[in-house]
Length: 292
Image 1 (tube, helix red, strand yellow):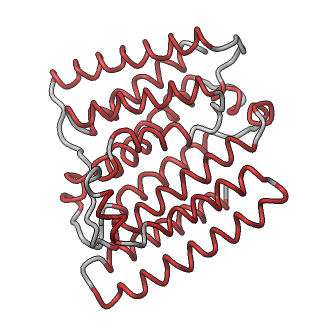
Image 2 (cartoon, helix red, strand yellow):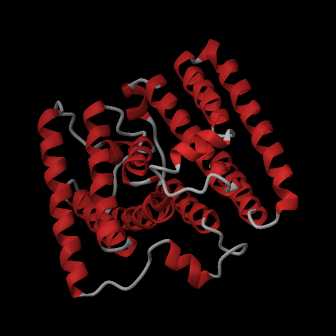
């Protein structure tokens, strides 16, 4: 838990500094140095892991090397044709680097850890809540709260707005579509008894199910749909969304999570982030209640 909190604090610190430096060119050199030192450290860590955890080491090293390419303006210009990024923006460059590094790290973990070992992991409700609270702060600081945007501007940038009766009805339809994906995925998976999340948590009560559902719905939607999606797009955001669910390592599970992310992403684009939060919370609560 301590390591997770420190990691979140480090990411938040980097994002706060990058946002602060975005409109102050005198700090751009410091951002550049931070990028080179950070990527050098990541590649060094990846190389060290090559002996003890080869798959993890390869994924970390490759993600570090790929991130170096983003330091070239020509590469960022090409990406700007498919993503809502500014090739001149130090903040957007750093955000892309962090995105690729996270994809590499989570991919490496999923490839390195055996399914049986993941299923034996145990975490508490408080661990899940702390992670999701961290996601909330990453979202807020990532889009410039306290540095470039007021709280009202931050909320608007994250896509949070009111949701009327039609919006709630639409959310109910998206929840139904999500369950349809889950049903088809379950038909392709071997029967394994308890759900992976329930196993990792060591069982859930109604109260813990509600707490986890609300924290996950808020934290994950604000980060992946609110902060990331407007810049990186629906598909990349949904891909990273699927990877962070380490308790579901089976390819069918990962693909179904990716599809759920796409559905929520389309809902965010069509309505707003508030709608995707409502759908995510409702889907999680109903899923948990069906297993209690």
